[in-house]
Image (cartoon, rainbow, N blue to C red; front, side, top):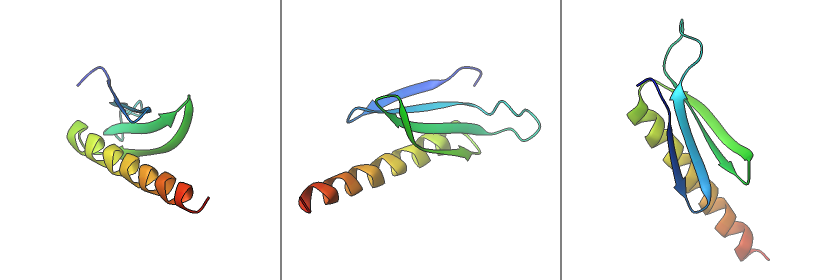
Amino acid sequence: MTGYIEEVIDDMVIWIEPDPDHFRGGYVWSVSLNQTELDCGLSYSPESARSDAKKAVSALLHRRSADFKTL
């Protein structure tokens, strides 16, 4: 993969691209909402990066729903 992957889930943007550090390799991913980065990480493959990012989105959505329940 030489480009990037962008996916939107519940207004959260997942961004995946090759790690710019070619020595280390892998793929960096981030989850953003309204141009604010909420989580990020480094994964071995694009598939694992997508999986890790989706897990982060799920955790963020769970936390957001728990926050609304306490209001």
